[in-house]
Structures are given as C-alpha cells and as structure tokens.
Image: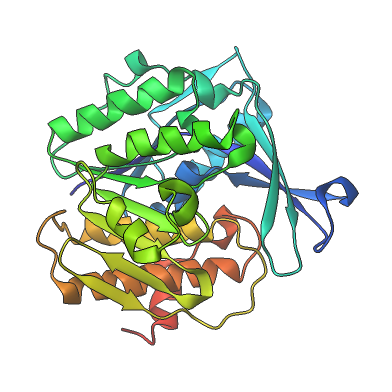
Length: 320
C-alpha cells in the first residue's frame, strides 16, 4: 500500500486559555503540537492510514514532544532529523469569539527551516505514494530546496503531489513574496486545496470561477475549494462536485483545514485511487468524508487533539 508523506514544519502551538481578546492581552496558553504538514500526517494516521513526516526539529524538549506525539498516533518518524543549530519553532495563537485565529511565530530561524535537499535522497518513495506540502516552509531557506527535491523524487516514482498554500503572511517579507512563491510551486502539484479566504489573494482575481480556473496550470488536475460552514467544492477540468457544510458549535478552527485534506489524502491512499480519471460519485464520497472530518475538528480545541478518527467521521455521515 502507498504511504502519505508530508514535508515541512512541525512546531508548538501555544493556544490561549481565553477567547475574544487580542494576543497581547492573553494571560495564559496551553501547549499543543502543530504545523500544517505535521497535522496532516497525524490526521492520516489517526484515521487509520500510513503516513510519514519529513522534517527537522531541534534537539530540545519541544522536539522530543513532537516526535513522541507523532509516534503515539502512528506516524512514521524515521525521516525526522534533529539539529542543535536551531530550536524547534513556536507559534502563539489568539482566538476570536468565533474560533478564528491570529498567529505570532518565533522562528529566526527554527529547526524546520534547516532541512536541506541532500537530506532527502535516502527516502524510499514508491509508486503511488503521496507527498503533501504547504507554503510556510517555502520561504528562502534550505527547506525550500528540500521541498523541490522531494517533489521531483515523488514524481519520478509515479506518485501524487498535493499542495495546500495555507497562507501565513506574518512569516513572509511581503505579501507579494508569499504570493509569488505559491504561484511558482502551484504548477508542481496534482491536487491543490485552497480556502475561500485564500483564493483571491493567491490568484489576484475576485471572480470565484475565474480564480478557480486559473489554478489549473502545469500538473494541476484537481482543485479542492473549501468554504468553511458553506461546505466544499471539488473541481476537475470537466467536473464540479459540491457538498454542503455541517452545522456545528465551533470551539477552535486550528487544524480544521489539515483534518480536511488529511481525510481526503487518507481516502486516495487507502482506496488506492489514481490522480486521473476519478468518477464524480467517488469524488462526492471523498469530499463528503473530508468535509465531515474538517467540521469535527472545529468542535475541539487544538490541532492534533481535534483530529477525528474514522468512526467519528462515519458517525457524522450517518454511518455511510
């Protein structure tokens, strides 16, 4: 069976104990494992799939905690490297009353940024494996070139590449630098997951349909557009499949998008589906499953702690 690899940042999220106030006014935080590629690897494993995380952590207590968290869930950590040159990254989060987030990152540099291209060569990617990445670690650092190496290696083996821009502007020198880099990497992916909050920024287009159409460039075959409570839409060159959202009480949106894409990749992986020729009925099943996983994640605090298991998702879908 294939493996879902994720590459990029793993860090510590400090989640506020209070909602509805700015980050400067938060008086207490709870430690939580985080980082979008880390979360996606955990999401796949928690659902029962096979996942492996590629990244670099500091030789510090936070790095130990992240490795132990992944191992405890069942993520393969053989490709997690450790370094004494930098510390494990930190992110402090504030939550608005509706569960939405504001971030402040501490990584100048952080250990994840030091993963180098020549440290990717020994990873045994196989035919049908999936590689998922985001934009946070595409900043100008060694890890950017590690991504390029991994993408090329997976494609050479006939694997599938998935990209979630997961825009975090505070980490970039300018919004334009972020946008330019996302657009450079986007054509390298077969699957692009993008949110309604990111679409206009990434594409530069206000018209939704035109913006979606512009994402079909290079190797892109699928665009999965998430709209929060309004549901999600899966686009191919010939099909448009939509599923409605779920009415839930939102506690924290941290990790919801990662739960969504993790659930989608879990299905591609466990059902051994190809990137080309997916039937609309199969797409609808996969999209409904992923949408339910994302909705469940919003009802729980934290990122990894909010990730659902397969039984949770099936229960929300009514046992389907």
